[in-house]
Length: 103
Image 1 (cartoon, one colour):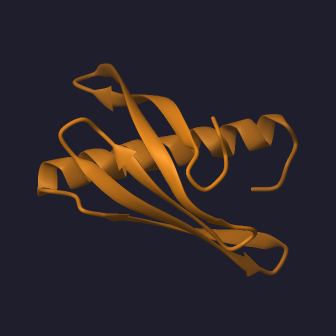
Image 2 (cartoon, rainbow, N blue to C red):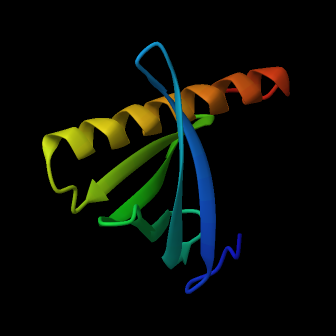
């Protein structure tokens, strides 16, 4: 991962599918990184490239994260991305709990 504007990354994801798991890779390129406010990147899923905006908002002692995907071509793709995002955030919660960090 090259975490800078113009830098790129590859991400491997596993999502629940048909009683098992499905694994896939996608790549991305960072367009904008404004600490501590937002990260904007293009996610390349092969035939589809979406723009992803991740925004961070202080809320008391925590942080609210708002993730927006732009350019999803249809409902199936949108639902798959939503499922993968939710499952990833659930896994992050589990890792933070293991490390004793607040969620």
